[in-house]
Image 1 (cartoon, rainbow over the protein chains, first blue to last red):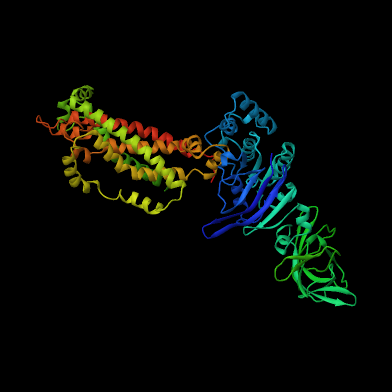
Image 2 (spheres, rainbow over the protein chains, first blue to last red):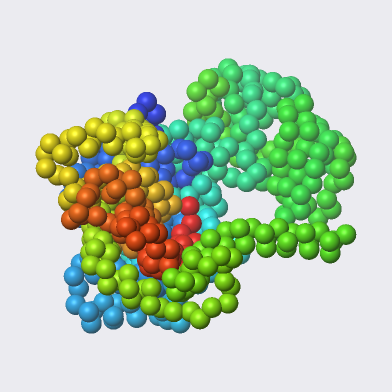
Length: 359
Length: 273
């Protein structure tokens, strides 16, 4: 078990900058996730830590030891790949024994550890099968078993759940989180699935185009996105963002939507810039059937009931607005409705840079 | 209509089958005939089969030696080619190095030249250096002529193995040679066997170089059998047929093995891209 520290680590493939200089520290026993769309450099980051790629600049520490120039075999990490990367010519037992044989452990101990892992992951009945004789979920558990059997200093997981069907994915999500907490092993996890990241992680680093946009707890990232891009990327459906102007009215500052001037909000910060972006999460918008002062009128475009709530897209002068609400009586398509935002739930971003300016 | 079409299809298959197999069946039948039956016109279809021809041809000392020569040259050149093809194929499949594309292309282009173009110059060279009529020379020649294609063949097999599997072994605590030996090579085994058989069969059947560059000591089986056709006593068809059948045996046996390995290769289902 160990902490992992990156100091100015970057990676370029020829002219392509896959990862810009990145520094971050993952604490001992922490479940840390790299979240981002495909091509954002999250897998590159994981491979750099594993030693499968050499950084263009910067240093990587595992515990107090600098491992930047160490070979993967000398880093004592375990990795679970997206496609599991099981050894097809070996049985499950041989797959599990493989990393232990590299350590030249006595045969009795190898056997004991395999049995322990098989019991924990319910693989006991599968030990003599080959990977091609297993279902996707079983292969995934073997890949996980091969990682935990050697008691590594840290786990590296590259989208390990993405090949499973939705139901199994949710089940494995919980099991993986529980397993990580039980074992107390530092885990670096890569995913493009924000729900996975939010539900499993202690902390998340959101990446875009090779740069960390924000690093923090799932709650922090959701409640206080550092910029417009993070606000829109994290959360389903994405945050509604529109341009606004700030006006002083009497003693108070009021934000007015440029495309729909009738809509006004009291500013959550005292000195906003004259022009800015206002973000509102879909669950922080209320739908009214009757007109209200300062409400944004719109026409229902589509209604998607999800079970416990519904996602309703509404066409307004300010563009398409997504609303997530537990409405008893769902509005009809093309019905005219009026939208207001919950006070104190606005996110303000600078218009030019998209960086958060408050609250 | 459908029945007629199906019957037509089967007839075509039958014709193709007869066309392909007839020479081999004819050879096999001739090898089992006595000299008299083999020469009778019109050919006899019903006769008492005999294995005497096989015994007789193996008793000709030159033939036995030619068989041993063929075996030695084919096996040695196969081993040599395998060593180079496995290493070369792996390098072309996994690593980036300067001149990779150009050298891979040049390697393949060497296969485009008909081997006969090098015969005159080689002949003079071998005479001058005293390498003419030696098994070592044939081994090197066969190896150098098949290595290019074999490297490409092994490259294709290594390309099929996802890099992730090898990387898993690297993270699991193995060096690159260790991962290659324990993981990549066993998965590529069907490819290694297929390449070995391909190389062996090419060397075993080779005629041109063996005919041009050997005279006594290093003569191989295909060359020796041509000698049997042209004996002073006339063309010994029955003996030649028996010899040709013996010559086919290793190829047939290896084809059987290759077919099993190809099926195994396809069965490596758990390797996802």
